Image (cartoon, rainbow, N blue to C red; front, side):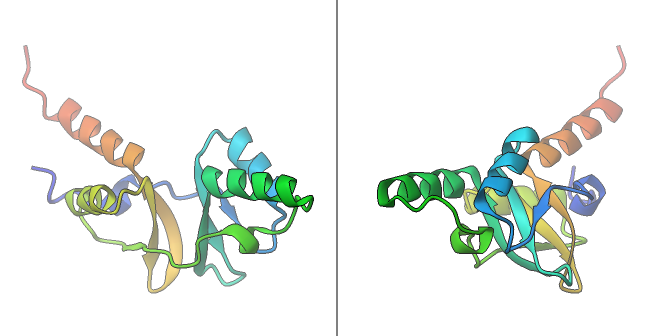
Length: 138
């Protein structure tokens, strides 16, 4: 039913992104002010170089407090091995990858460049949009 719907059509095109050199406390501010649980980290050429989550930030703060060295950059705490999805992947395939990988979001890339983000929430919105337009009339 949803196999023909491309995830690209439902991705967030301007999600919060961070640079590797962003200070950890700036990253925390970005996540908390926007009420998001993570962000994609991009280099100056728009290439995905990492992801950072609230848990990464929390771990860094606790570790820094314990060692008396709170601080650092996103590059110090981000996950550098990032799985992304290519444009054109179906909503169903992305949903399966999210479930299989226990992920909340994936960066979407086109020819190696970041073009957006697809998340559990965006997939659920796609399902609701489809359900609403395809719902039987009363």
